[in-house]
Image (tube, rainbow, N blue to C red):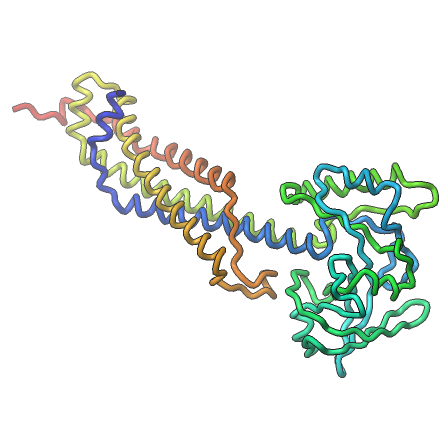
Length: 388
């Protein structure tokens, strides 16, 4: 066994507050990382379920009228399906309309999909926020007006309400069946507004979605036949830039928390190590008189400090993971969805990210502890070792 490690195990570290500080710092850091990751997953998954990660639409897309459909089975569709990052491909029909409830009216976007086939027969699902605004409840019949070459009126029945994650009232989506919206537009079964791509979770980063949109757009342009309308590919990053800017702000705040908590833990450990060095000045003098180098002596105290850091890290991680487990199962901590887009504090345990945060914090703390270790070189054995 290395002599430095042997001696380090027999040196008592009395800086209990330093260990508590380490535990609290890692607790805050891991919770911050888990909440940040939770927001990313909840919002990206929510957007993906609402409108896909990438949309392929007509280059002349007209959300108000019905003059710009694309085929739901274009010649290039199989090539799109074979893209490794694409998990699901589904058609959708979009149409701007006006809902009327009593004396209240509101402009909305109707979205018809195969996933909402249970709403067939002029059934719709309305966001909770819009239902509250217009006084709508399940079972109500609502007339909807569609403006185009001529005004069309349809009477829909509210079948359900759902949580919307879209950033403003102007972009609220009313869910409907694909067949109903095709009939509203006077389209055939093969005509839709968009082909939506849902990517695998591992590809839902900002760069991943942008790259998938660029690749899908290139495929559609290169392999479309002459009689097919030109289409463009748009990622959810381009459609909802404010949401992704907000996520970037959260990531910046988390980075600030990580730096702050690492600094707090590091300086508390510096204080604890200095106390330990002062208490062991005679021991350091004896070790020097026996021929041990300053580096070997510093290794003793850094090893003892490292043990404290690792114990505090383990305690903080366990407490943070326990919090994540409880919050993930109960969602006891709530949020205002108007400001945060979700109604609860989301947590997601991204193990590689947590381990990276742990490793980075540990390395920085140990580097900071090299500063008080310089104190060892200034100890003179002749003045600190007492004889007789």
